[in-house]
Length: 115
Image (cartoon, rainbow, N blue to C red; front, side, top):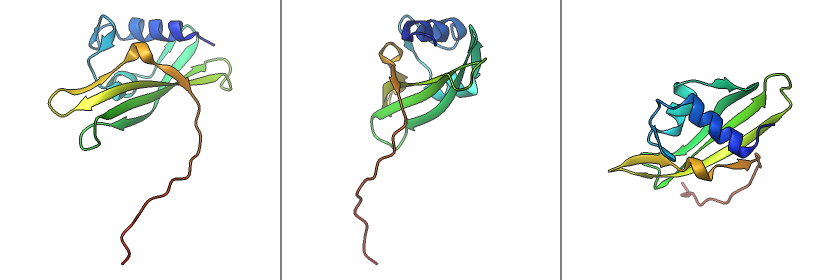
């Protein structure tokens, strides 16, 4: 599996022209990972999985993507990239702060109107 630094390098290499400037991407994560391309790098496939946040969803914003070995589909790691959203500025992802995640199911309590 690629190290976290290799994952960052892959994103930098594959998306130099996608708004990358220094240490930050200026485009929305789903555009970079999903809409622009799911791509392969050194025998690994990068795929967009999920996004949260944006317009009408508060200031929290993040994406999750997977990195899967082309030769072994069981060799997969998921990464989350935190970010923020502001209506005046749009969204920004903190690519230098990406971290490995796993999917966990949770039960939550909500309050709904009685009808």
